[in-house]
Amino acid sequence: MILRRRTIAAALISGALTASILLAACSGGSDGAGTPAPSPAGPATVASLPAGSGTGSPSASVPPPKAPGSSDVSLGDLDTKNFSYAGGCGFELPAPPIALVDGRQRHQTPAFDGHSSRATWSSSTEVTLAGRPYLVVQLRCAVGSTRYVGAHLVGLADHKPTDLGIIATGTKITIRAKHDQLAVSTAYPTIKDDHVGPTGHSSYAITMAGLTPVRLYAGEHAAQIDRAIAKLPAHGYDAGLVGISGYADDPSDTSWVVGLLDRPGRVLTAELLGGGYDSGLCWKATIYTQASEKLGHKHLAYNGNDGGTGTAIDLSAPSKATTGVRGTTDFPVTESTPGLLIPANGVVPALATATTETAANGQGDAVVTTKAPADAVLDIEHFGAASGSEYSLPVGAFATADGKIAMTGAWYNDPVDKSNAAFGMRPIVDPADLGEKTC
Image (tube, rainbow, N blue to C red; front, side, top):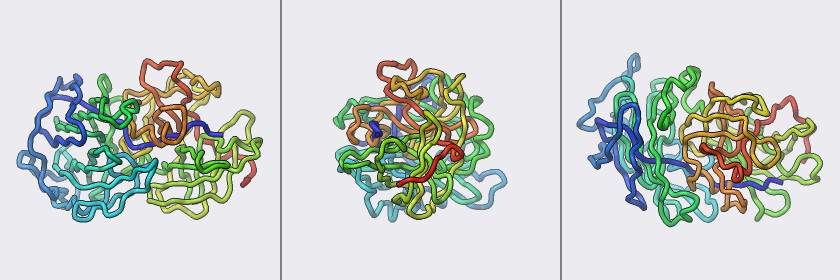
């Protein structure tokens, strides 16, 4: 049976680079800002200046640019108070469309652990990155007694305004523009805060690789991003990512995992849901998609290889969500492999490495490391204590350097404390390895 479960919503962040334009400074339940981290552009100070206008019109300090070769679509004309975003502030798993009407989300998201999220519009500011226009739109979300802020980056995809992802989430966010990057500083609640207040702080830069925003932490550079990422469509980095909850006997023993919708009627996972063919158990799955769907399952099929893990779930109805492509990587990992960390809640990717180290569970799980925070409540709750697991670890996906999701599980920061590395990541099952279908 699955022992780990976890709650997701987003890990993030504080401090940044020298900045010529302050886009926004929003605070929720805390006033603590993180210490700015040095970057190639030098250290930054955090100040409070006016945010952009109410409907997305350009701020006074940033002229309304046009994307080279684009149509006459102007992001400055976009009514960001009446627009659909990919997720709210990182609470939802995965990030569904969140439509605002007059600046408010009409319906709360599905509850987890007694909490729901409802987003309201906060600010919108137009910026230029590498000669192209974008909007940084900030939403505020109430999740229980905690007030989060989620910053979304809106750009033009096929000449259409599109939310490219959540670039920051936390209780306080500061974002600055500097040449072709955004410098981000956030404060966020950690799993040790017990919802009392944010003690986590992080700083990073947002750089664009085509239509994919990527988080870069201290010492990381845009040259480390594979050129293939720039060829992905909008949200190609998390295409097909789904959340899965389920149980074998007792609904109170529900656990959560992350999977990949590889075709409309099927989801692939890295887990032996319910223990596999030998367990005699029938795991009852519910699948949550990026199209706001809640689907049941018809059949399960397990990895038929000795010692292999992974399950395929035939869905009760075809999903309307965008499908993804399964990536492949050596397992066990024989040499350190660079790739991307893909959180399950709509937060944009960060650089990551699948190492040759293995987790303590004795199953050969790969230890995946990243400089992204590994202690944020929003990355852990769906999969951790709120689901009854004894492990408080962040769970997401590892994508190969070209952006294909290859493994799912927990991630870590260097240096890794092996005594606390309860489990790691395993590869999503290869459909060619599946055995017969069962309940």
